[in-house]
Length: 217
Image 1 (cartoon, rainbow, N blue to C red):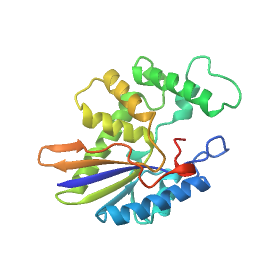
Image 2 (cartoon, one colour):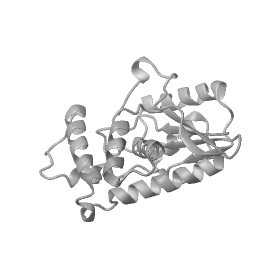
Image 3 (cartoon, rainbow, N blue to C red):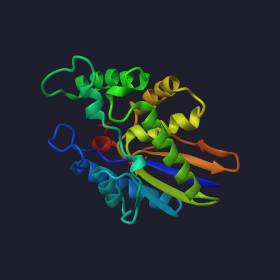
Image 4 (cartoon, one colour):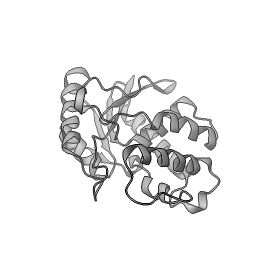
């Protein structure tokens, strides 16, 4: 039986000019994750990461410097999705207000009624993440362990695909939303790959984090 470990990147720089950079806390979250998995999990036989800087830096912090890049694990354009929400708020938003608008904007995106307005429509995002999930499950192979460093959105999509692979896009979107709002920075989700396919074993584990190192954004 193979295992796939889906890792969310460490805390990025919310509110900064360049979000796609790990904060000091994010670097420490990556180091703590790498140390924990080295003592508690099998050595990875495959390492994969998205192409974003925060994915690369999290992998580096954890000690995974030779990960193969797969852009299928990149986060969706959350700023673009929020910008296309009707009557978006003006000015800089705090965490609470941004989260409120983010949930409304992504609900509109996943509803599938305005696909032409988005650079990457919801069905396209679902399709690319599902394809990358199939690929990494194949890499895990019998008895292997594949680690993927990615973002919350793709992890939530992978979980929705594992839970209900035959769901229509609207149902898939509702599942995705439930997973996407709770994923901790540098947490990991485990998938087992057996003769009958892939199954989600755990979701959003973070035993390596406590106190100030436990963050959601």
